[in-house]
Length: 582
Image 1 (cartoon, one colour):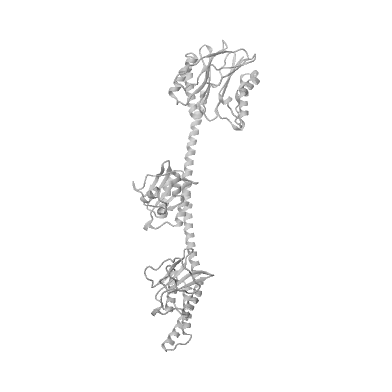
Image 2 (image 1 turned 180 degrees about the horizontal axis):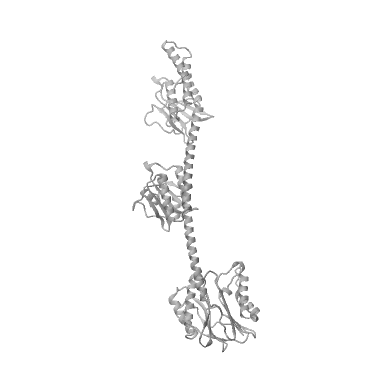
């Protein structure tokens, strides 16, 4: 390491010593040569460790000490030994708290880690201590005098800038390495993200994630758990033999979330069943899968070759991959839900078409009467029902029914009522037909299901309607000569009780009289404030439009209900049947 210039000075000094002459400046020249050699060494192109080791040897040779160490500042953690010579076993690698004085000082017993040195020289830059030079006892027990301490102060001044530059250079190298790793990780995340978004199969996503994790970390095993009602359930595993990983890790979502809020090395996790289960299966890294703040699963990664630990960059990569995995799994789940909804929509559309086919295609001609009806479901399918059933002797069966509930279950029950009445209407008195229908519904439907139903048999020749009202909204009869009646004779709803006793009522029609049968989707229709349409408004519409015929009455009633509900929309199926005597 000695330069030609330094070598020439050293030869001159050696010549003086051989001749036995001791010029006054000999000692000073020796120190200057050492400082020059030190500066040259610190400015060389060797690696950082080699430079510091060579510089330490120069100082130890000049001061004739057999023990020396150089500690360099390392962030807020203190000082770490970067070079050492002649150190006894057990010498501190990292220094504890040291009270740094202004000049080379003899360490006190409380200066942890420095008790093996006779003198410590701080190296300062811009008022900050960046290094500590520790030197052992001199040869033959000679003390450190003013000349030696002066040399050390000069040495510290010369070494400050090169050491600081070395620290900056190493920090830049560390940052560059970190940036290189992050760039590589970003490329990996970009590639895996592109593949994840290209798949809508949850099993394929899990296989891809497991393969990626094992390849990136060179891990021997990987497992992916999904959160279920009773804990974490194993969804996919790679490199795990049967029985090596638990099929389920019990625990509540909140507890599991607290135990694993962020990616963590398994040994660093808080004690608990999750940590013990992962350690028992030789998993070294646990990464939560979370939708927002809610835990949805867990990615467990096995040990790396040689037991190499997972660093901060690894944890960041694992967290980013977990977020991509969760997004991909959520996308696949939403895709599955969308497909299921489309299938249900197709099924509902078919059910709606079937249900619509059960309604009469039009009102039959009835001598002396006009009859019209309309039914509108609040959803795709509904539980309201009306029908016209031709009977013997020119009579006509009129049916308006409302099944409890809405949607598909109500529509299925409505289909059963339709089939029964089509088959049984006219075979017995109206009360007997409905009592048999009640027993059928009670035996074949859920106990919470029932039907309100108005059934009447119209005899056009006699202008008479025999009817039974089974818990339905009482129909309205408007008389042309003035006055109104409500048809209430009947009994309880159908399907709720095993046995019901029904009564039949009669009503005769004169010219101009009007019958309106509606479901509660008319009377209980609500406006945006929650007020119901009510009986009084039904009466008002009937009174204002009865002179214009049955079709006009029906149109006016439906329009009035729609205007009343407005932006609130429907809350129930709407059905109305209007019968007008000519």
